[in-house]
Length: 441
Ligand SMILES: [Zn+2]
Image 1 (cartoon, rainbow, N blue to C red):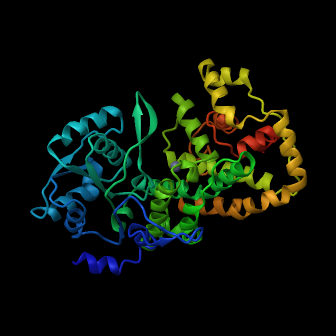
Image 2 (tube, protein in one colour):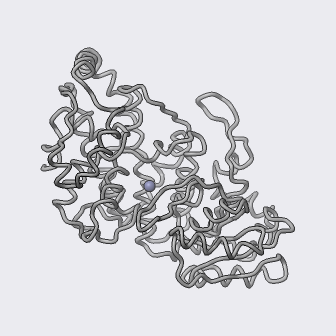
Image 3 (cartoon, helix red, strand yellow):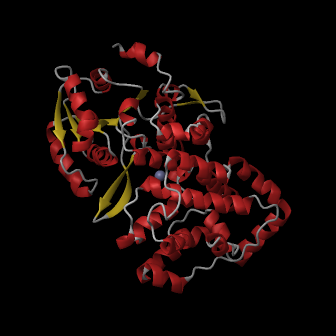
């Protein structure tokens, strides 16, 4: 099969082809925009095209193809069969992959005899390779086995003594999605990917609100791209769950764009605000009662809560009354431990309202509330739309779905605002004495 012909006919890449070629015109400034990944391919099938994809981006390189036992079965064995004799490549099946710094160090030793790596699927394999090749100043590409947004980011999630850190790394040369392979991935992963992109709405509202109240940075570029496909993706939520190729292509495209968001903005705010803070809180503090849910699953549950709070507060035609920010020191010591308190005091500094600031905001709200909320309402998805589409997609929606202790989850809603410096609806709700009421509805 001829790739050139095939990609020209490829309807699944959508706007991503323009981005790869640096030809997308941003409606905000009418300038051309590109992305740091040379080729993103979303195809119904890549069976037989692997050698051409790899050789184009990795000419004359000696490569190691790395999969784990699951992704080897799903795709790795096929790739190696198809490229035998067509590329300078060896294979390695990583029996016990780990996205820990130890795992990364192990991959660095493997890299000594190679110019780069080809990752086959899974967040663990892909993120470890991303970070190992970055540290070794080598290159990599990835064949995805799920529709996650992590494949197209430049950061890697690596754990140090059990604590996950998001680290600056580099971008893949190429990211290749074979939709037939994706349609066979566990439904739980597809639903989690859906949840981790539908949070666009809560993140955008929080980020724009922060911009308006605290004069923090705000850049809408990624949102223009996501808006091209979001409604269609939501309408197709049940087809995504049933593995329909066209519906999966929509989710994959949106996940890829969400991952690329940071390349336009140089910050993760675009898709990570209040809802992500709650998921981070769960990962940091649930310890023994962590139900083993994934990042996307937790973000989905939190997105539903944040959407409920945003809809309740911002759809109200009268403004809330803001009080000076209070850090509940005793509760924090009791719930999160004494050492966290100093951290929290530091973290809260940029968004701590004193009497003067709260008076100023109250005055501003009393005169401009409707003008203030209008653009936020435009970015907000209706709560029922989120709730229903996540249900149709098979995503977890409540702490009960996740088997997460409901009192712990209430604490996450209440205290997550204190562990990150990003201003979100949780801060507005907390400072206006509405948070407890909203949590306990
Ligand atoms: Zn996320």
